[in-house]
Amino acid sequence: PRHYALIPAAGVGARMAADGPKQYLTVGGKPMLRHALEAFLASDRIAHTYIVVSPADGQIDAVVPPGLDGVTVLRCGGATRMESVQNALHALRAQVRDGDSILVHDAARPGLTPELIARLIDGVAGDPAGGLLALPVVDTVKRAAGGQVATVPRDGLWLAQTPQMFSYALLRRALDAATDASAVTDDASAVEALGLSPRLVPGDPRNLKVTLPADVRIAEMYLAQPTT
Ligand code: C5P
Image 1 (cartoon, rainbow, N blue to C red):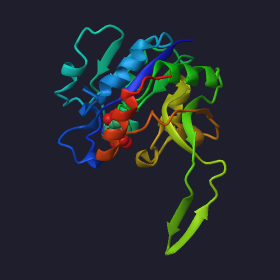
Image 2 (image 1 turned 180 degrees about the vertical axis):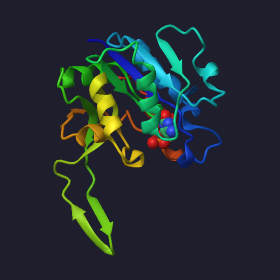
Image 3 (image 1 turned 30 degrees about the vertical axis):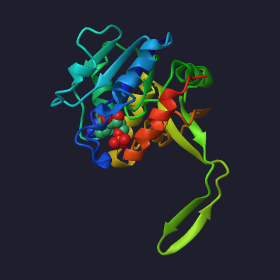
Image 4 (image 1 turned 60 degrees about the vertical axis):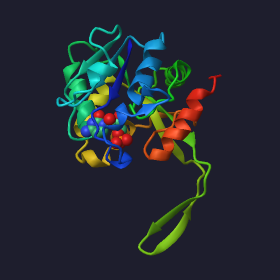
């Protein structure tokens, strides 16, 4: 079975308060999307990379020049991340086999490396439930609900990263079964809802998601470090 990368990049980046979609935000001299793409292009484990953008996107050609080897842009992004992934999977039905793996990676994580891609693939090791990069929670976690504050034991808690890797057939089935798109904040949650347990493969803090403006500085600091 082959491994394909899928980068949903059809968001509008409302939380960044920047003047454009955050996948195009410049981090360390390049749009974030370009960093993520280059990690997949540099990996010898990935057969091909697909990027899904909004049909109205006018910036993608400057970041991913038409004809660039190893990557195809799909202009079928939807209203939610989940819908963008679903539309892309549907568009790929003739190219990808049910048993092939799809590594879904957010464009907002510029710190991905070929080493992390290999770690995920080797860590999932063909598990039929798939898996994802994740980090153990190190902070003390509080839940505030109904005026009551309580400490959630952090034992066994992980923060989900991407890529998240599933067979094509499983990912399609899981997303098609999900009824509330806004509740599907990552692909693994849709797979979990089927009663399956995706594997948690230790990720890396450098693979952070850029959400708030201050995250850009942190990402740039990591990108400037030699990767080991
Ligand atoms: O906004 P958020 O950080 O959740 O976005 C995660 C990823 O999903 C980003 O790469 C974003 O471009 C993508 N996305 C998408 N289609 C949407 C919304 C978000 O592909 N409608």
